[in-house]
Image 1 (cartoon, helix red, strand yellow):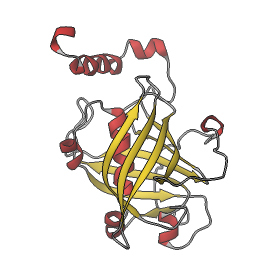
Image 2 (cartoon, rainbow, N blue to C red; image 1 turned 180 degrees about the horizontal axis):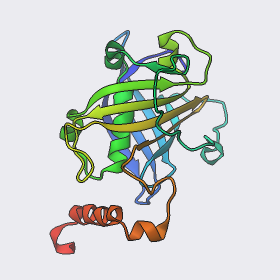
Image 3 (cartoon, rainbow, N blue to C red; image 1 turned 30 degrees about the vertical axis):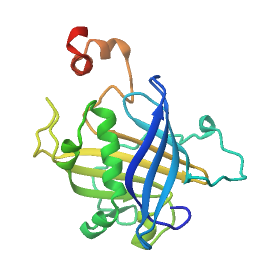
Length: 236
């Protein structure tokens, strides 16, 4: 993005991670240049910053074999500051919000990717079949950068994306045909990309966590149930 290129993910060829809750992911992937059609292998390093919600920093994303002379920026020194914003009452302020057109949504599949990341963090064991049912009803971008053209807004280095979607049920919250909401914030600087996001109205203890309230809540019971489902039968 910073280099003005547009690569599409073809396949993840290899990845490694440690067994810790907060673990860096070392990923090797194959991508295709959407303009020339050529393929290139990339090496990516992704560091998780929180457990139970989308909060990650991409520290490295470069073609395999390419090195940089610039010293790496320590991941823990990269701060995004404030919490995610609340869902706006209205998107009518066109100077503040840009409603993504359907054609732009199809040509900017990173919006779907951001939504998938939020859902995969929220729901353990989600499958490709589940994700294939997703349909974005509306996507709105807010950026503080001084931009006028849609392409500039879509490629803003600092942006908040408000996503309304359907297509994947969540027990006790929404059915497959109910609309759900997610917020994702992107901050891109030279050498680092931060993505932070959450579902709206589905994780009430994430931003203001109270252990006593949580461990006596239906949310904790549901989390334990989902964890037990992942265990082999002889360990349950």
